[in-house]
Length: 218
Picture 1 (cartoon, one colour):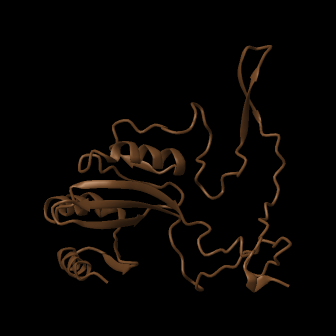
Picture 2 (cartoon, rainbow, N blue to C red; picture 1 turned 45 degrees about the horizontal axis):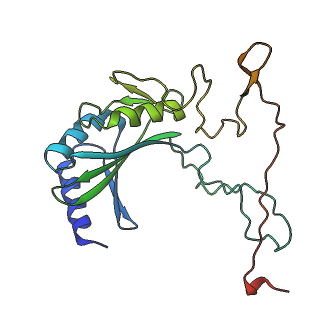
């Protein structure tokens, strides 16, 4: 483990001792977790006092199915299919909010990286926009809004950026249908693109596991 990560972790814990704050080092990366109400205050301090002047990425995460191994294929044969089985590995009584916003920061001055994670409300996920702290958040926040439905208060132009006009739903949510809700085609009679309900029947896709390793040879 890099020594600078432990030093940075200690400094952050000391600086943010007055707010709910956790820090964890895993896979040689430092992640801090804070409440959504403190994102602006923490962001300004990280930029001004710790030199994290660049926002490398911002993304949403849907934890609604976290801990479920839906495609556990370790027991599959080398010639057949394996049935997906859900296995809930959450500890009894453990509960997390469904949506989280994750920020990846870079300090060019100190050559350091930092990840911030904050959980939002499950029913109506929303958080303050950090666009006034890191201008690069503009399109990242629009992407998280488009794909996850997370609202960013204070964003000057919060609208979809990847999906089509009039798109219904948020495609990166775990409960969004894999085949979508509508399909489009060109109608030669109407001479325009039309939208229709999807014609694909929902089905369970089970991957075939083919192993060429000699450990699985007959």
